[in-house]
Length: 505
Image 1 (cartoon, one colour):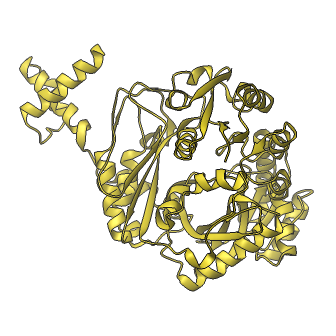
Image 2 (image 1 turned 180 degrees about the horizontal axis):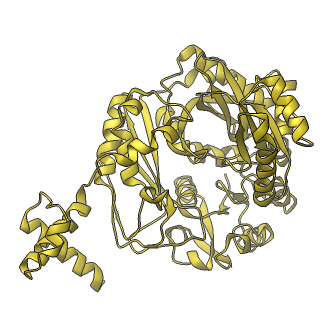
């Protein structure tokens, strides 16, 4: 095992890797921008190195500076987390050329799966089922129309180097094609510096189901079952769970074997994820491979009992996997909600400010992977994800109930978050039945926004405290505009005292 590892990331994933290091007896080195100098991941690391100003283009995306930090501190390996440099083949190669170990797949595997068109062709050659479409970038709108006529509308335009829904457009007629292609190319060029776009058949109403794979350098490649990631908005995942209500043991075995074939075809090693579309008839199609640890990896950890981040480190250090495919089967049900600094009532606009109060949920089967604390400054410089709330229970029904309870316990004041949005989703009958697809949330959003606000905890108490304070001052205006909260005067004063103590801290 390594003596020291540098984590080339920030926030909750940096903390997650630091904890894995410490449990293995490995020292952890953090890097940070000027904006993150007081961040929790910096404090929890054994060493910390400043790497530049707040903008990620001047700090977390400057690979040369990160490699220099590893060399200066004597780190033997670099863990990239997710996002930033995690899927940049040039960075993985530069780490290797500097005499360090990149904790992830080989640069060649990242390169093979980094272009969606190249990855599609690789999968076709390996006999992996893909959505009908092209393996080469489109030349112009006329070619796109001809291909759409072959596959049948609707079709999907996708950026070759894309991700996160950028450079993606659904086209339903010839008349829409030219403008949609121009828009997709422009967005792809801006996001990835590459305007290559390809076309594939648009599958109506599928689920997004992904398979976690794990492979060592000794030839063992295993799958760890599926994750259901269909609750998405604008192609961004919001709630994930494992296993999936749509996957039985036989389908899991088939999809898992396909994911293993895909990983072997790419020359893969370490942890990775193969993403599939699963249609209503049980047919599945390869979408892409994420050559890194996924945001949603905790749900797989909870149902398999396998610490994926620790095994990333162990595999990179040369250890063989000690278990076989037959040893792996889902136990119970896990669910994850991404808690982001977004105001869902205002179209998910980013929310910034200082976290003035933070109360974390606890109890049986509750896990919090967070990168924030009371007093944390939330800016526009980085991704809005603050933390992940994860639960594990014997059944999906109990997992939903446990997540609902945990969300009600969670209190974050000072910024807007998606906490109440998740409560509304969990109270939705279609979601509770598992009757979802990747288009479900977009269609359901108006009714979710119109649902009763799920007020609870400190939010209700603060309203009550304000009511009582205004009443005692003889001011009726607040009472006439805010509905009374079901809370005692003693509770309200306790909240007010806590608020005053916070202000004086």
